[in-house]
Structure formats: structure tokens, C-alpha cells
Length: 135
Image (cartoon, rainbow, N blue to C red):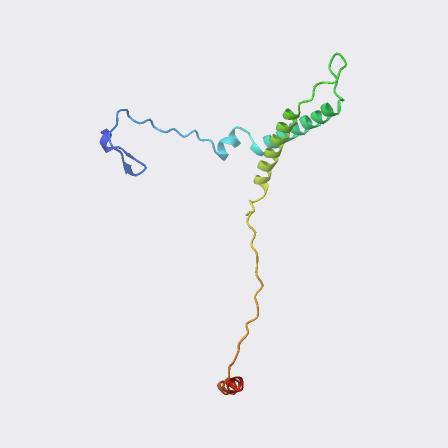
């Protein structure tokens, strides 16, 4: 096949210097994960448990309950604690995405349907009121 005749994704491509590389599928899908005996949800749950232990450690560290080998309280890092909390929060949100469908953030406000009012105007009454008003 000549380079000018090459068709990618149904679109004819012009000639270029190098021959394009063939795209190889890695084959990672549900079946591949099952073959590897890897469950991503289970891995996320295990990681969440580790984050919970890490957050408990940071709380003890903040309270001064964790001592170094010299018997002095270990140094607490608020930045590390906050980063751990942010990672845990993201992980929990990812887990919730597996269990629940996303809910639209827009709020739909329903306006109550008002009853329809019909006015029937009688020409004679209008003329009588008009004459009274003119006087």
C-alpha cells in the first residue's frame, strides 16, 4: 500500500515522511482485570482504610500524643494533614461515583399552575358604563 493511499478512520491521509505506527490496543478491559484478579473498587476501599489510619495518626500527632525516640512530641505538619484529608475526600467521592449516578447540580423550580380566568364582556353593559362615565 502506498503512503498516499493510506486511509485512517475513513479519511484519506496525505503522504508524509514516516510511515505511521500501528496503534496497539493494550486490551485492558473488564475481562483483563478479571483475569488479573484485580478489583479497582476493592483496591480503593483498602486505600481508604489506609487513609483513615493515616488521619488518625495525624490527629494523635496534632494532640502531641506521638513521641519520638528521645521522648519529645513529634513535629506536626498541618500541610501534610490537609493533603491527606484532600486525598481521602477525593477517594471517597470516586467510590461514591461507582455506587450512585451523578445528580444534576441545577435545581428545577416548578411554578404552580394558576387557574385560568375567562372574562366574558357584554357589549351592552360596556356601552352603559361608558355613557355614565362620559356624563
